[in-house]
Amino acid sequence: MRRPRVLFSLALVAGLLLPQHPDASPVPGVIAVGPGGATLGYLSKVAVEPQGSELTFVNGDELAHTVTAVDRDPDGKPLFSGNALPGTTSVIAGVDRLKAGSYDFVCSFHPNMAGTLLVQGGSGGVGAAKPRFQTPLKMPEVLTGSRITLTAEQADVPLLPGRPATTMYTFNGSWPGPTIRRPVGAKTTVTVVNKLPSAFGSISLHVHGDHHSSADDGRPDSDLVATGKAKTYTLGLKDGGKAERAAFSFYHDHRMDETGRNNWYGLNGMFITDDPKEKRLGLPTGAYDLPLTVADRSFDDASQLTDPFPTASDATSPTTPFTGPYAPPGDATAGTRTLVNGTFLPYQLTANRRYRVRLLNASNFSSYDFHFSDGRPMVQVGNGAALLSKPVTRTDVLLGPAERADVVVDFSNALGKNVVLESIARTDGSLTGIGSQSTPLMQFRVTKRAPQSAAVPAALVPLPALDIPTAPTMTWVLGLGANTGGTHWTVNGQPYEDGRTDAAITLGSTQRWAIVNASTITHYVHLHEEAWRTVTRNGQPPPAWEAGLQDTWRLDPGDVVEVAARVTDFTGPFLIHCHMLDHEDHGLMATFTVLKPGQQAPAHKHPTLLDLTSRYLCTVPKESRT
Ligand code: C2O
Ligand code: CU
Image 1 (cartoon, rainbow, N blue to C red):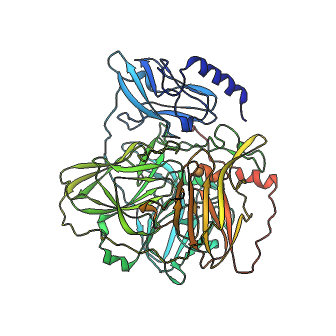
Image 2: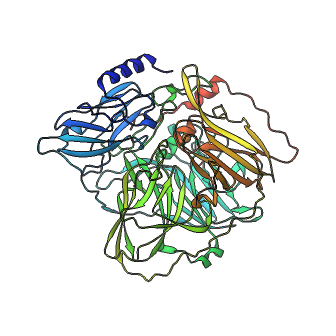
Image 3: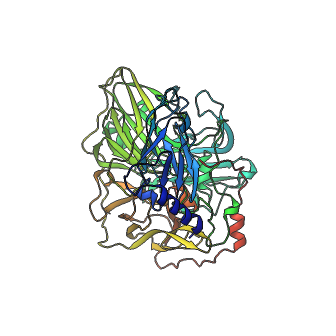
């Protein structure tokens, strides 16, 4: 165990100073978290504080935690926020300027941890400001040609209203990158040209949710696009010789150990495919089809992105490369502001009719439970990988990193109103999950009249037939591993290693996989290559919104999800991994290799220490962690 001494003495201090868990009366000026905090929450759910004094945060847990106000100042920043590394204390910035009142706070890494700060007495001070929606929603440029070029380049992108632009590493100078929009079945090439500063290194492109060859999968450690070079990815947009189903995919960099960093700096966008046969469904189209990419970032005072990623010094040995305060399970890259299509708190002038809203959670780590401020229902028609067979009406939709939801929202009764799309704390009663962020996202200003010309039919796209094996053909267990001086995430006991085949499966076979979360933190697990149907969730039939084809699943601690698919068209290595990018970059990834019948799994040689340490070298300047 790391830092046993500090932990022991802090636990002692916390034990003397603080009331017993869960809910005795709070000690003024102190908020504390003990071992198991991500599950158990703060030791006392209430903190009290005379106005004008400081709040001290005592972290006696093995994970980093924050105390972050839910309410925001006029600039949109949390009213107070502070981070304590494992076994340390810190002063929460911003508390001493608050006016008297009651303020909810959460841990921004594990927002299921929630508490309330009561500031007592006094007058004056700063209080919560209403969110200001000042900037029109941006739509990324749409590219529709069969030969697309994405040039990775540094660009200054306006993200925060009224503030200097933010330097990012983008595709084609914008963030999110251009939206690629193609008909299903129409062969498409995407050429990635790497014009980033050489210190950024090589990149790759993965079209998450699409069915394509291993060579076109944006492999993390092979066929990378080096500085000054280009690579063309070929996507047939077909499955089994026929046009693929319509979908909206998430394209992003997938470089080994740097996927988190490369996405944070801007290398991602949306790839939408349209099926002309779906026109008959009458879902909203054109200006009434809104792709929304939702992602959080943290900024310094000059509006530049913070760099919350570990450096080369964190790489110490081949099997335990991750040490230091953010080593697993303590990793967490959560931003303090959540942006929609690259703008903080945008608004959209909206007509009084139905819209199709394509929600993509492109955050590195955070989950959002999407909700409308007036409780307006969303009719979910799909989850990005495909349309559902039947629509499902919901008032909130929880999405982890890389998850999508395709929903239809009716604003016909809202003329003259402003409706806010927000993320709220998880409503499903899960006590052990990682929670979801509480934050406003964007405003729909319903100012325009338009005829209602779209409805959602009772039947959408039927699930293709599949003969599902009665028992799992493979089990994947997600866990945490420790070794001399370090920790890493594991799949079936091992951290990811390039070139190692963790499961060999036969082309043409039908697989039924069980995914088991044996760790104490939520994971969002993504399977490359096929869209899978969810057979069971914790032994039960899945909820209606999980009853279609999908590529990413939430697994709270202890959850078991079984999925099934037929393996078609392509041989070679593909990935299973957690899409919380800190987890992916810190080991929670494995390889399944698709073989022709009778073919042998490839041999594999372990890399040397030199291979591994050179791989971690990263020269992007480090600033502060969120
Ligand atoms: Cu969205 Cu393996 O990735
Ligand atoms: Cu994870």
